[in-house]
Image (cartoon, rainbow, N blue to C red):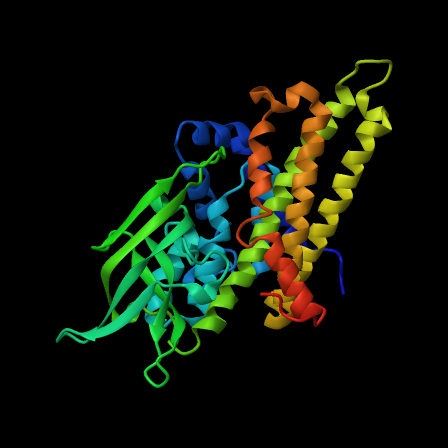
Length: 389
């Protein structure tokens, strides 16, 4: 086992970091506070191939793995220019389509994922289901209208990221098993301009250029080829996307934590109130040192999860990805808190760019899966304890 990334991965990190610094955190904040988007950054990252590093080469991608995409996500976050939709579009949607989509679906969608011209949202959460995927009520019904099989979707989704910037949404629905009558999950690509599909922005107390939406799906008719993969294997296909989601979410959090910590360290080295800079005092230095340790631990688990996933060990990757997501969420919250505390009153002044991270970092403990559900997972699957829910 090597704890040193390949020269190619290190070069990728360096190049992405330079792109992030070119735009800077001020660019991201300006876009968020004006109600805009970070479109220019996304487009340039796509043109440079950074958003498609995990897409197969035959479709214009880099042919790398989730570990490469995670490195891109982390470095953009460390520059203060994190792109939330990376967690969804190239990580979940492109991965599922690459692994389980038909040849036509791959040809249609993957080149756009590779160069960033295609964005796809992912919709699983529902108002009355929350983390309980067994209570999903969005359903797909197969009908024959004379022109071949058609799917009709109905349902509601909530807290779906970046729908307004996406051409389509990968919707987790349920179909009825013809033999048993039981509902089973199925994945459908739904264009955002499809008749019967509507979305409404959810107002959030988070300063972000990536927005959350409620979806309204009313008798949306889709062609037969809107179904991704096999109707009978959708649960496996779903988790093939959720593991990369957790890995990218962890990388997003680690990058944010690195950004906050770097600002705090620079401030602690130069801010002098007594004889020495405040960083000489253990009350300031120790929380920053602790944040560094915990971010590095979270990063290491994230890299392990990515290596397992890219190696084809989905079960082990699932355990590691959940642990990485948990560790990163806890680490970034502590890092941001320590950074704000180091700055004192300046930590909440707009000039220093840390106040916006307080709510954003807190969200990483909730989404895309809550820390409590991860603890349930580890208790049950890693420790063998009885299921508690």
